[in-house]
Length: 58
Image (tube, rainbow, N blue to C red; front, side, top):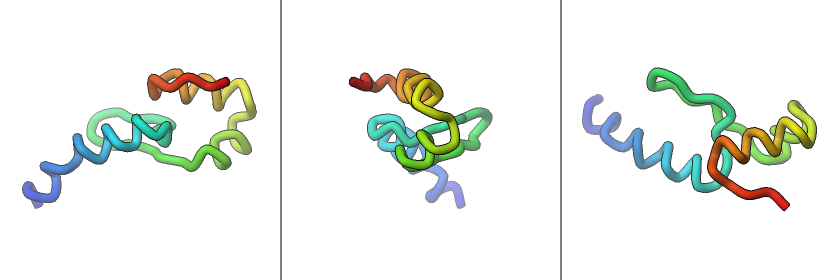
């Protein structure tokens, strides 16, 4: 198990890089596609999520 957990930071970095993290706290992350983010949170919410992921949205 600890060997698999060693990849967690790698997974989170990729998810952040590509803007999939909706929420993260205490070793748990909620990921969603961009389409799902827009559908669930609207355009403003989507932009906020992408800002949290350190991504620019045009």
